[in-house]
Length: 117
Image 1 (cartoon, rainbow, N blue to C red):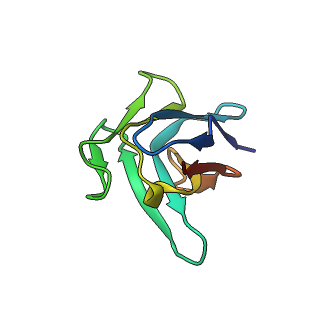
Image 2: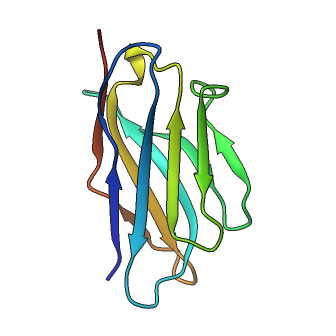
């Protein structure tokens, strides 16, 4: 059993910053890739940023230069540092962890980020 838990969401003003955290845990779990997705009301869930098993990082164009994703070395923990937040960044943010050897994706429950004045 793998559990993925996000934290750090809330309300922030436009131009502000916020950091999300994600931890994947479970007995003998080894996680390969991890990623952040987000889903705004009435829209599909979209990839925001990811870190592959080899440490390669990618970002959606909408957040390049504003968001930074960091995975702790050797840990199943992923962070998303979000800067210069815009109202269009408002969404539920989900963490995804892929278990090594299985390829099975596990999702967190999501954390709400609201950017509003």
